[in-house]
Image (tube, rainbow, N blue to C red):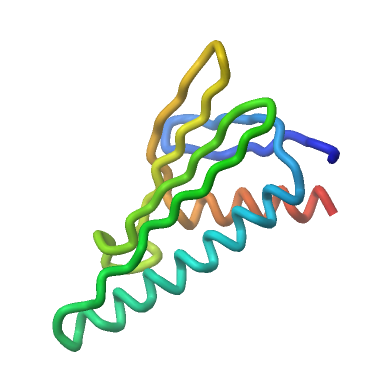
Length: 115
């Protein structure tokens, strides 16, 4: 299982950490399901009360622990959605919010480079 650094661009900087291509594909799959939930919420908002959607909770444990969380019920569109990112190891913990679209771009760029 080969790792290479994934860089996530945040509102006020960026963070890089070791990540695997398999984990990136798993995260991309979780985001695809989240996008379907966001679209369902958006489409239902015009026709009455939308059906509550399950939040996305992705976790990766490698050299660091990464958790990505998003509740699709609180955003009006996929373009407005934000995710909560928690990144930690035994010495440091970072919790921040990032734009979903920026996370998708960073993940796609990582997968292109990872091959």
